[in-house]
Amino acid sequence: MSSRAAESASPTALRDALQRLRAEVQKHIVGQEAALDEILMALAAGGHALLVGVPGLAKTLMIRSIAEALALDFRRIQFTPDLVPSDITGSEILEEDHATGARSFRFVRGPIFANIVLADEINRAPPRTQAALLEAMQEHRVTVAGESLRLPEPFFVLATQNPIEQEGTYPLPEAQLDRFLFDVRLGYPSSEDEVSILRSTTGRPQEALRPVLGADEAVALQRAVREVAASEPALRYAASLARATRPDDATATALVKRAVRWGAGPRAGQALVLGAKAHAFLAGRAAVAPEDIVRVALPVLRHRVLASFAAEAEGLTPELVIADVLDRVAPPRSGLAI
Image (tube, rainbow, N blue to C red):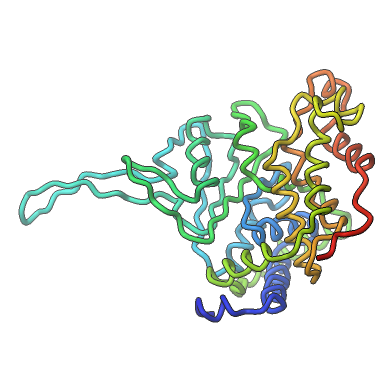
């Protein structure tokens, strides 16, 4: 689809294309519907996603499959302890003109210059290298040799992390975690799904996926999602949920005051609204409803709520805290539609 055609595509056509993308990815991925939906919502909202799960749950395969079903430039970065920032952003090399003998520097772009970047096992690299992603994720640009360079649009970072092998890793700082729109958790498949996985992966090679969305359509999709209406009550509900996770806020629940060191910042409210708009868009609604905000609350807030050491010792997880906040912060009863 041309750029002009993508811009004029109706929300219905873009929604149908996103559903076709989902169907294509499910040719390779069995189960994990909730995780796949959350990744697609993050893409539609123009945000980045962190995938957390034990080895063997197809985190990398899911991202590769999504990239294959998108007609976008894709790069994978395997994060390791010896990775340096220039391995991500690129570096200058000295070249010599064989005809004249003149020497000059040429910038060789790194893998960050892609539409979809898979940061595999992101917590394996040291903080200095992790920080190389910060500007790119927030500003969609990188600064190299004093020059600011724009990244291609659309631009998504999809990172994976293993929660059980922490030896030799560098936990992501809160400032970088906050750059991820969603923290997506993958669990073990059901018994039936596990049999289906064995059936589909031990026989004939899986078929190649058909590209469904291009760059222009993806940008148009993001624009359409942002045009979903969010009324004043919806915005206040999102803000109330974020504020209720802060232990020093007057609206904080008793559990939050006891179990939370740091609550979600203002970017969490932005993520709640954008995620809810994406969920409403996928459902075919023109305005955000309370269930849209509730649906995305867990992937938006779980990595932005920092439990205290005492709470961790008691087994009080961010998920339990968020469930308590959702239970005690009443959603608006009316006035959501514009």
